[in-house]
Length: 472
Image 1 (cartoon, rainbow, N blue to C red):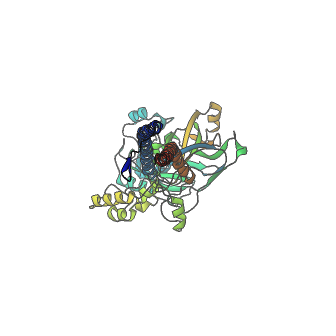
Image 2: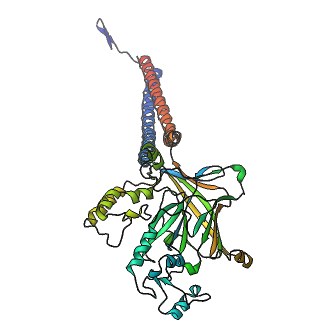
Image 3: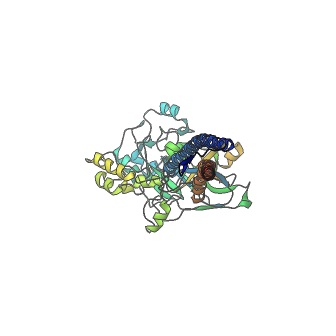
């Protein structure tokens, strides 16, 4: 209302103007309620997508940590293949004989140390191979078996056993073609004495390189001959009458000792033995992988060809100086190289437990060889036919041992790292693609809804500002 002079006027809005004003106020109220609903919907959608993103990121982090822990264990996988070419070590072959000398030769050279069995009929019944033909002149060594015992006989046996000056072509074994063989001594509880062993390609105490097999792919389905041995063991020449099998042989690693009497094959007279060898090469991984191996050949060359060349050799030679000092002999060795290191029955050590503890501590460092060559073989034993035996009539008790590879193939077992650098990035990329890739959709959705909300708010405030200007 306005006052002019003494007269006053009241300002009245028109009905149409008041109606527009009411509509504007109602529109603002409706837009405000819609905006509140939109904001609530956007907040719910944001919370849902943020939750989804957090879950995906958590799963990604969890699996990444688990994979890292597993990766730190340095896992490996195994690859098995068949190699038809390559250079591999040939096996060693060891023959051990309980006979230190032929019975008849011993009794000829030492007649005072032999005598006739005190119960010849019973002896011939138990051992008929001694009594073929005229057995009245039969004499056996004085070992206390159907004879009186003689200390002199035992001493002579030891002297003959430990004699290394004799020709390497022994009274029972010949390698074809001829080649000198290594002599070692092995404890034989059956004869209650040491046995003499002859080995080829055996390098436990040698600095020489082993003989190798050069397999070429063109040699498939061919017979690869390794060794041939002629063994002569006439039963009537057995030195220890109570023992039926005199000679045993075994095939093994060039850098590992073995007891053919326990892990070998007995050779019987009048038979031929065909031995088919299969080579299995296993390649391990050094620390920090689980196989945790040592490349003995590398360290052997690095140390001027000294030290062990296999895990078993490491175990046997471990703390050998202290053992020799305590026992005065090679007490723990399977195959003894020198006669002066052979242990007799009276070998006693006052510090036995201490030596064993040192030995155990030393052997902990004898890890598996990074290159393990195993020799598996099958033996076919065939009796000679009569006409062949007639040819051997002058060489009674003759046997042949043939060692070969029927199929020149080598089975290789390789342990390789499960995760190389490429596999590592590939696995991590897979995790990122799986979890974060999914969550990208949620991230884009959150950004899109946020942008729309901001745009709607800007439009709302602009519209409200225009309506306020019109209202004035």
